[in-house]
Amino acid sequence: MRLTEQQVRSLYGQDVQDRSGAKIGSVAQVWADAAGEPTWVSVKTGMMGQHEHMAPLTGAGVSEGKVTVPYDKATVKSAPTVEAGTEQPLGSDRLAQLYRHYQLQQQERPPQRMPGSPELTRSEERLRVGTESEPAGTARLSKQVVTENVHTTVPIEHDEVRVIREPITDANRGEIRPDIRDEQREMELRAERPVVGKEQVPVERVRLAKDEIVEEQPIDEQVRRERIDVDVPESARRRG
Image 1: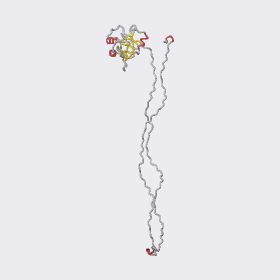
Image 2: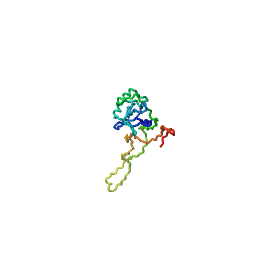
Image 3: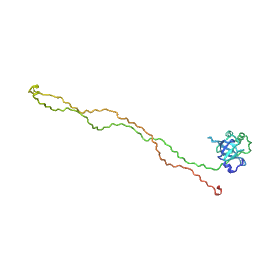
Image 4: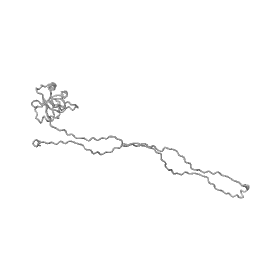
């Protein structure tokens, strides 16, 4: 596969699909032969791990940002692997495994890893806001005995004496016999007095309950982010 330097650099990150069009992964690294032509790529399949599967560019096609290899997905995903981000050339043992796996004729000189497109990774801080619970005081119920004055009234009865005089007339004089002597009559008198008693009566129940109140709390914080400035000579800038 003969590609320009710009095309080789553009391979990095392109989707890799099998001969049926099924996506296998993306190009992570590129190796070239002695003449500088790209011959192998490592494919990052998206699985968590430190290894990438190798795939040959022999018979592969590059179009519309995709690399199509003339093999099925299972063949590529079962191919020998290399460590992610390795700077080492492919060893003879690993090359022999690759050529056997893909049933290709082995070259005399091992391919060399080609440098990828220069890049910087821009990072930034993200604010993560959450909540945590902490003590905010203690609510207590306590009961104390206090004394207060109570003013009220109560009705009371008592006997009062009044004198009734009835004159004796000719009509009833014959019924009463005169009897002049010292004599005394008595009448028992009664009077009520206030009596105070006390009783204990439950009047109410008092308990504590709590409600969870949600309110918006304003937060002001600073986060850092990186800015990448590009410095390209005027003569090398792309026109249009």
